[in-house]
Amino acid sequence: MSQDLILITGRTLAQGRALHGGKDPAEYGSATSLVEMNAEDMAALGLEGGQSVLLRTRFGQAEGTVQAGRLPRGIVFLPLGPAAGQLVAQETEGTGMPLLKGLSITVCARLDPRQRS
Image 1: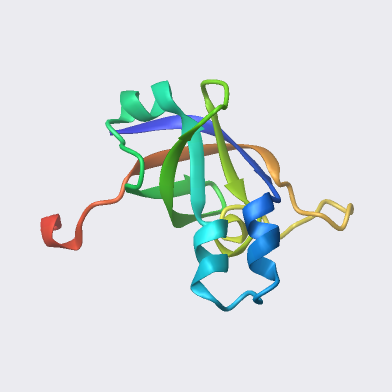
Image 2: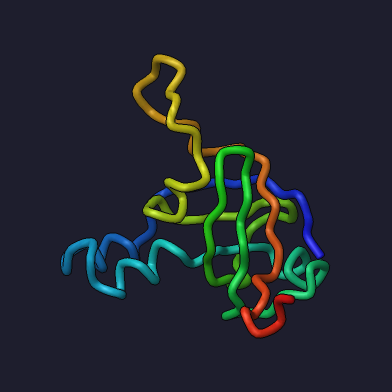
């Protein structure tokens, strides 16, 4: 099951702390792939905290780990980083910054490779 939602990206405190160790350590990767959603949206999609999800926009796709947060229904938050970079356009429309907020995103449970046929 999937649901269309709106993607918002930004920096987090956990991400800032992880940056002190550089961008290569697993801590930074975890901090930038944590997908925060409204608990009701998660329930509607049959998702549980800690579950792997697949994120898709018209520009690309990425994987993350979902957790319930204090967001309004319909909003997905993903910290800026490698996963977010795969979901936004490379074109900046002359601003020098890619579109990082307000993108339509589809979130669905990531299938366990053993379940694929």
